[in-house]
Length: 326
Image 1 (tube, one colour):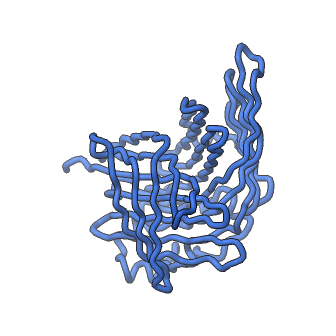
Image 2 (tube, rainbow, N blue to C red; image 1 turned 90 degrees about the vertical axis):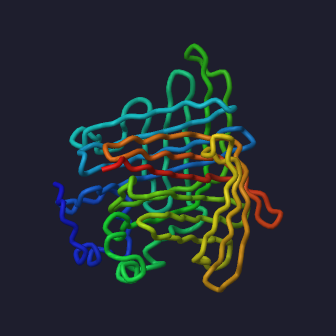
């Protein structure tokens, strides 16, 4: 059921410490407009020239789900996209012969199968750091004080992230026969979010997950309703997480003025330490998302990152929205 009225007090009350049950779909009986729940996974195996991104989302107010998977092998991409009415969603997340998700151990391990007549990807994603709950950074009441109720209404979400280690196999097929098998090994990232996500209200957005040998840096910065919302975290082996509180992004684009080719991320943590990370795009994916009230354009960038001379890789995501005139 969908409830067009957003009860702020109820949402604040429902924000509790996460448990293993939060890995799965949430159902409170009624959902406010623009309610969205999504699971996202990626990994990068640069030595094998294999990149993978997939997102599963439930759009409660539209009574449908969207499933997207993108596999890039040797700079050639294979895309899977499907819209399914919610009542026809498989309960076990085995969508068809092409795409299947399995939660092996909540908050720790997942498996994804993706295949067609030309390939079969079987990848296991295991946490290299514990889950990070973004609600631990700022509670809803503080969020409302800083940004206002109107921003809260279109942007409030429960959200957690986790850096992953990806292992598995990729079989390449020709005429139904396997002619090459690549052993997958690389770093990746996943997140799970549920709550309000009104894409068209977001003017622009930067999200990046940069994977280094001993660190992962995850940042998110969005502009909406005249406010700049920023948060991030740095995971480090043997150390406590560092919370990022300020993010500035300088981006160089292609001649079209939109497609990013590189960025400089200037970060400041809670202790006041400044960090600079640079990215360089090695593969670009354009994902336009038209809607009734405007258009959202997403650029999913596979990138090489540099942090004080240390090289890593990951995803740098850029989003821009335009609203139709009323």
